[in-house]
Image 1 (cartoon, one colour):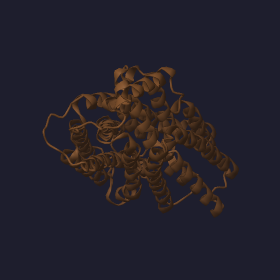
Image 2 (image 1 turned 60 degrees about the horizontal axis):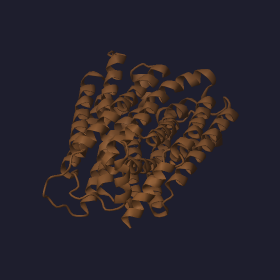
Image 3 (image 1 turned 135 degrees about the horizontal axis):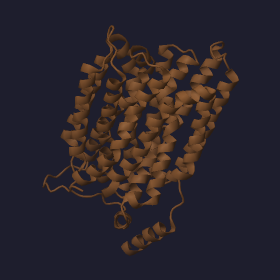
Image 4 (image 1 turned 180 degrees about the horizontal axis):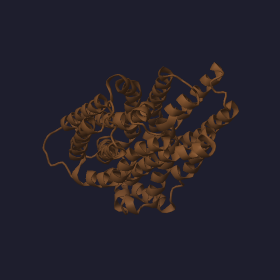
Length: 432
């Protein structure tokens, strides 16, 4: 870990600037990662892809992030947040400029699948730097009684970026082409790097709260050797699979099955992202006050199971008549939006729980582990959906999403190990 040796003194309010820079970095990253799939229908036409090829190229971006998350997290704990954010966002901007120059369809020229897929894979590899670095910055600058709120605000950047992407990127791709789209994303990454350069620094003094507990945690084996960290990281990734199903193929579902127009599709996806933002901020503050993060995570998982199962049942009941009734189309839109919001509302709370378990000094590694799991799901989900569609159509897609939420629940909220409980109690008793 890189410690601050500077004699510069920061105002207590500087932590909010650090948080703002983390939000800016994550939002720039999220506009690309969650916004590009919002153009899936236009991408399928412009690049002349079938559903299987579309799922592959969208999944490659998630694969790149999954491969790079843990190495970036380890580097963050060693070098600090600022160098990793600057390196990652800057190189991501360069990769997007390269895509704008050489991976854009136009006229009779259709770039090969290698150009598009390779470009998105590279964007993912470089963008994986953002998550662990910005999360570690929150853990080191905020006390425990504010971390749930701060981490949830940071996590609102994901739906914020996705909402901006859903609102803006289809319009840009339709009217100005994919070159303008990739250029816009590169500019946002550069702005995120500028905010990180200006505000992200190592804190001169570590947060005061829970020092005995964190010291006891730090004395344990690192996150890579902690089975509980691996379980929670796996649960986070599995519960993200239904979220990625909505984000990657929700537009295709509404277009192909619901026969919705571009305006309705865009409005629905923006609603999902805005709803997720509101719920993440509220849940962070609420769980900070009540100290009930595990119960909240369990409730979100259970509700996601029910909502996706309900969506599958509605699709089965609709059969081939989804376009025959306006009320049925509205019900599909409403249930998809509710499912998307619920399965996106828990991230800040889960990441806070995970980072607290690992300790602030090793939060970059723990968050890298979780994000590796998350973006493996990001890779596998769009890759799998076309095959599920070929087997039994959209009902099977949403039933599998429901099953993923069911499997994630016991992993995401495991019972605390007896040894961990004794260690924390011993540390607290010695401090009093």
